[in-house]
Length: 311
Image 1 (cartoon, one colour):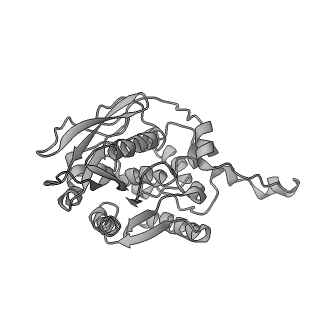
Image 2 (spheres, one colour):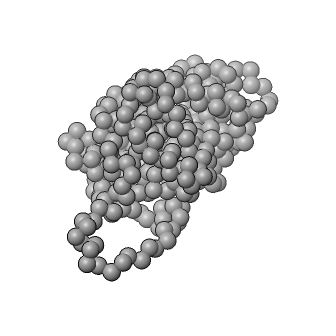
Image 3 (spheres, rainbow, N blue to C red):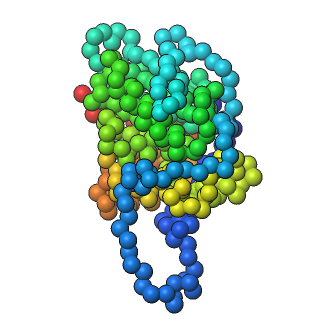
């Protein structure tokens, strides 16, 4: 799939250290042995922490993803949606013969860091069974305005896309679903934390990242340009991924992972264990294939989930 053309190594850079607390928790035992017992401070909820934090970028500029100007195929419209002071683009299509009744809808967030025509084709089966579909391009992608922020402003754009979709006359706002592949799955996982979004369920394929991921990428020659913030700042890294914020989940999330995609199998497995203890609606489902091959089976499985809960 074109969604991972430039950075296929991302799948192999996900961390092995799954259950650690990230850089902020990596103090040496010798530093703690002589100190007074630590007083546990109750963490503020995710939404409060995120609202209080402003990401600091070392470098500004567009997404590193490669793209070409493309026009949508017949039956698909190129639309714009607002995200803050940005005007962003998306492809949008309604099912043939939808008539005057509202339909369930899917918003799909592509992998890699640029949108290509195949990113629409992978979700065409949703359109064929009666779903309105939307494939947003995020800030800094495909000529869009804005800076690439890696799971920060892009999450705001995703929220804006869901909100825009819910306002369309053809859409039943009580039957909206979100799904993403790879880094797009990381974006969708964060949507599960926002109670105001009218999402029936969310899903990802190979999209569960950990806080430690960012330091690994920052130290990688090939992927260092992706991390434009301090990868050792606890707020910067913990507010970009679902794991540290699992207790504030409000929307169901199904994390599909390929049986040959070991890093993401472990990442999602760690979160599933935590979610079970917390009583949160996160589940891991293993499907055939590697990081790329698993997308088709994952979308088919999520389509079944969406259909079963849409009527």
